[in-house]
Length: 294
Image (cartoon, rainbow, N blue to C red; front, side, top):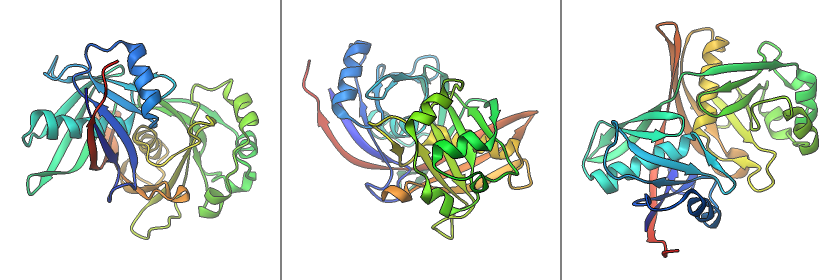
């Protein structure tokens, strides 16, 4: 099987979130895909199971080393990039992926015939529980005063749930020390098992928000660039009128604390009474190869 390595939400190579994309994988079982994802050992690996459009999109499955996911952000953009560049092989305005969560469209911009920024329109967000600051501060290793009391800690999902935590500044972002045991006890009553914290203070003056995405998983404790999580953040920013408006158009830096300076673009707003979320970024081609038959 042919596979490709791409770097998603990366302005330069090796600065974003790497992804393995397999093509012509329709004959694989789910168990075989899971084993390959374990061997590749990226945060996610995707499998294009049908290389012709089906119901208006291309069938794709997404796996982490531990499980199959209904939706994930950087795998969606990275797989759309490979569909356009390696399978369709011509500029197209849009490619749709048929995922477990439903069909996700990805639109393209081009410069000199090469794909520039890719945008994915995420599913309509849903909002879950709100939480007080004390237990959240405790499992993050912070004080209650580090949290921005103007806005709630809240569960948000656009197909994959995240716990959104507003912090006041970069100092709070930098001081986070996850107490895994405390968080696992807290998470027993939540749908979201991954935490997105954000701050209006940034490293890059051109950016609007700094984000960290933290997981209690020892195998992948922190993610350098998270499209699904930032989609949830965009929905949260609109719902809470974080910037004083129902429209969000921002640049988000992520991965700075782990030396992987990623950039994500968020556009969101209310449309016909619903919140519409779009997440964008660049994809860099890294390498390709052949995976041996099982």
